[in-house]
Length: 232
Length: 232
Image 1 (cartoon, helix red, strand yellow):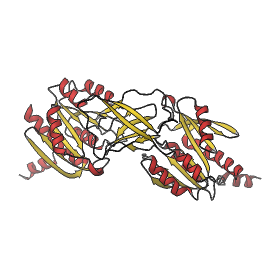
Image 2 (tube, rainbow over the protein chains, first blue to last red; image 1 turned 120 degrees about the vertical axis):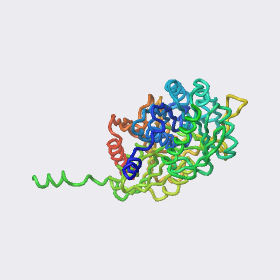
Image 3 (spheres, each protein chain N blue to C red; image 1 turned 45 degrees about the vertical axis):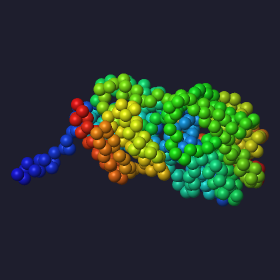
């Protein structure tokens, strides 16, 4: 009847993630070379913040572990600010013990300086070249997936080539439940308000065509909650 | 009399740089390593943008050559956006031919990658270390001072130690008329709204105590116009 139909239309959207604890990482990391200089990448954090907003709207209790961004914390989201990959891992380890879902959307530097200079490095007068030794950072999402095997772990793969191949390899190698592949060739995706991605899981894949990041986040959260409920 | 006093109080501040062309660089540069990663530094651009605003308020025609920042272009200022040191030098060379004053406030990367990868670099499975070869960037302000010897050139020296010594050496080595020394030890200055600096020129020095960057910019523009008028 009409009243029932109206009630259904006016009802709030289903709380897909009610009572769920979700940890989301976002933004780049910054790896200092000295007190002034750093190594970073072009992630703006927009996709991760959109996911935090969408997860909170879906009823989840959300902790956002964020590298340096210029973005405002979404309403109802707890935010922890970090700079480096090491700091991001520490924060994620702390907050993931009671989490149900971990979404690693941050663009974490693969490498950091082998030694951070305590004073600003001076230009050498003698040589035009400088050799910088970098060492591998910890793999945050692989470490979290290993530490908390009960967690439903969602990764992101931002690649400029061999997107499907690299994404599916990461899904398997890092023991994730889902990976979102992001084509960043030709300045796509970075700092844009729109994006298109392909999601790969062990039994399937789904293409999300070009759309605003907040709308894309709603679609990804719907897929994540569907796969999470199927797995639990 | 009272009327004359009121007129004096209500009069606009003296147009110290009326009919003068001023070029100001601001912000960091970003030196790409590949399509995703870059080398940069912690400059927010706030001091350079405050100087552009203060110079425009003093009646100058201002061109702001800006690295990537999150700041709004000050009213009445022409802005050229660049990413790398090489792009910044090109833009400065173009706009400095007719300029009277050049203020190099940007924190320009001293080094860039010897080779920029066209695809996103993959983590090596074999090795935990990575050696990155950097080469020296052009020295923007020294090149501008040499190309346009008639320009009144103002540099900035951001240092964590030996501030006076390094600043005075830069003043002399780069053929500048004035250098503003900025102590950036212990997270001071970067992305802050307040700053304290010391200005050194060939015949003197002046300390500017801790104050809002826009107020500090007014003081620096007053000093620059005073020294510029003395020299011309």
